[in-house]
Length: 226
Image (cartoon, rainbow, N blue to C red; front, side, top):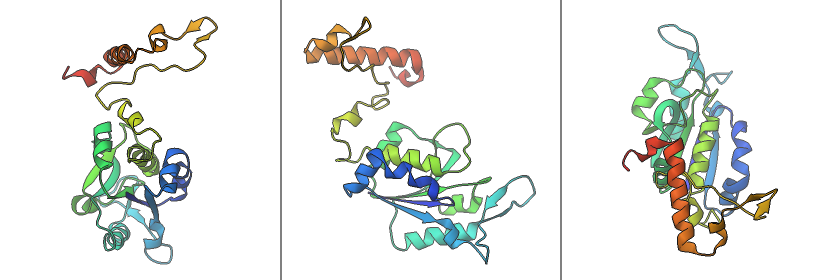
């Protein structure tokens, strides 16, 4: 899979995308991440990328010309399955959406700044808009990292145990059950006996009930079709 990210501040992407599971995916050549500095497409001597919004009002807007030039320079070389704009008013990122995007070959992510990007770009070049939550960040870079991580870990071969991703929260509209590790007893706090029984069928039943109960209490909205 290839993920290209257009950014005003590419240095913000460097650390999150060069460590842990995403680094492993890149080292295995399972995920290729290309970071494009939008400043290279800026206008004039000062490489201008933003301007005042028509109609007045506070806040600058990312200009149409530099961003479209950047997009078209990339699409001339690569056919992207989706051109995604990270924005608070986009479709909410969910596990099913991450699953869907992980099956794609080429994704282009656009990180917004200021009051956002010129609406004409959204109307004519963007194919999908995604939000990571109902809040506003200073820019789209952190959201792009979240999306890349959510997608990248699902690529076959990235995780040591591929079944691990299938038991994550939200995969079955359930939160994950509680987990424990050694020692079995610490300061009189004991691990549930069922997990030490070696009876795998009963353990799986217990985990399902725990996941269901946790979801009922914490995220009952996930059980609307129960």
